[in-house]
Length: 401
Image (cartoon, rainbow, N blue to C red; front, side, top):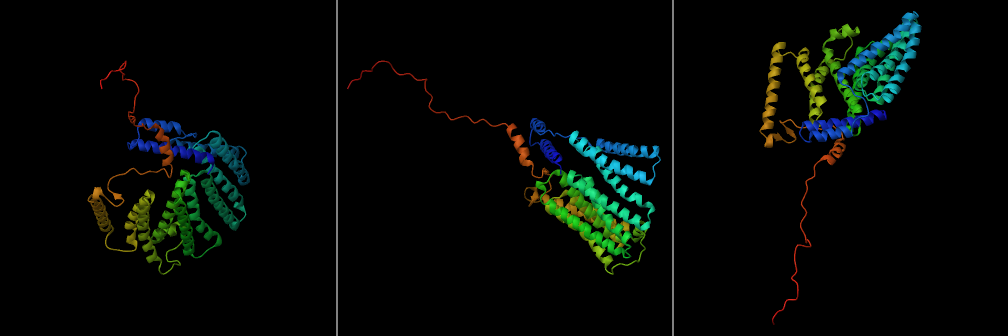
């Protein structure tokens, strides 16, 4: 990640953690304001709605700039390729040099849209010229464009830490086996699905291993790795779950039901459809990972609905009602079990909401910022010998012996 974003994200993380501590009542508003002033980011930030508007405005503006000379000079495919080759590095240079380094924008939507458009126009510049060179050449060109999109998304993730680029990289990786099957004329759809499972599984494992050292990673990388991991889990789950809906595969990819498949494909997909949500919930609980917990809950609901295609116990409405009652009873029982424990908790689990730190190793820096502002209790010093205050009698006192 570029140094500008890494340094800015650390400052933003400290300010956000101070705000959360203020909301939890740990520090005073004056302390939070002092931390915000001391760690004020040097980057320009906007809210999510302005970010979306800027991204849309930038996309429309760049499309208009490309279309204007194309309409004026009546360019064809070769001319449009030249325009894409000209505008791709121009968009990347404006985003990186002028907006990020010059204006110090921090994920404002405009620079993200420019970088994504640069990757897209470079891919189009490779694919468009082969339109009239034959079907085989066109297939290879679009495969090369696919690889360019994948490489560009990975490069944007590594350099800028964009979670959206990481999601796009996983999406492009998931489509690569099917594109290869179309180019290489694979006659076995099961092979493409097997390659897809291996690729997504490797991506999920790699992202999980990298997230074990999240305390030493910038927040942009953490968001990107979490997006990659969730997208890979979702891709694996959809791959095994949509196998039941063979008509959807036929409509999307041109496959016909009953084509080559392993004899144990149905039981394996049914087992994986049930195991994946349970595994996500278990890992989420053990590692206190909220993203995996949400994925486990959503995928479990989908599995309850779609497992009917594998195992039939009755009508769909009856199965959903029984499953809902079972889950509600399980949740109620867990809460009762936690509340009846010592101090309303059992082990490390509690029914009460707790403040969950999200600093990834920056709490020491936040504490260092807050510590000078904490009032120090004054301890009275112990009184020792104090000169003065007493009188000695004048003259010599006569005594009788």
